[in-house]
Length: 289
Image (cartoon, rainbow, N blue to C red; front, side, top):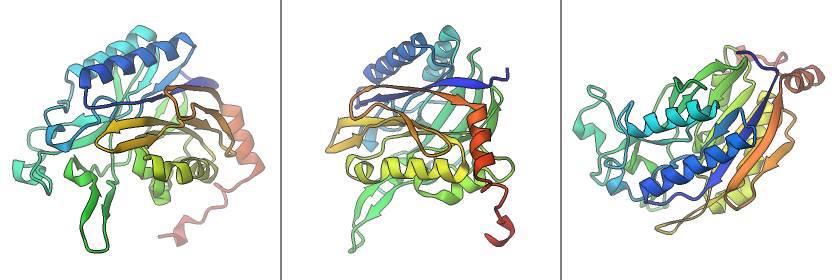
């Protein structure tokens, strides 16, 4: 079904290590967004479990498992397209052996995976986070290593939904403009979807800056969600789930509290920006590689 405009709803929430409570809260926000007329609803990164890596595999989901079924049912019930943030997805049979699945600390790892469900509850896309945030001290000490809990995906994902060209990323992907250039290689993107758990200290300086930059570069809407507040274990997120238009204007922003950022995305706005500034047509990709 082709649409000329969409109402986007980006959710901001605080997830912890209580999986069932997190899922219930996420579904609560999805219902509230749908009640406000949203066409597309976006949950944050790791919304179902934001806890220690030693439990991340047991808290993970198998493909087509119970969490996926609940999310599909919610999309169907509310007649929305649900961008299900991201959650831990266990490696499937044959994807890798158990030794390769373990991280530096010996924990079994999962993929950080985003699923998208249409209004009939059918899964229309799946993306595994490409870039993992690994931070080391000058002495080589691991300070923060997502690869201790997660496996990296390696397949960029784009697709068409409601007549809009969509590209998927997750959190740390935001820092790599070449990734978004790759997403737009075959066809310009209309909406870039980015669930996140962007940290407080980096988020206050870089989150909005990077979202607006990617929107301007790709002349596309940035549809971005973020975790907020304290998650335990000394971890905290910046919040400010937001929607940015193709000219870089922030249309909606939840601030630092849980809630919903709601805004409209228009096909004619995308076309007007691209007509005003023909940067996409003026690219010379043959000299960039």
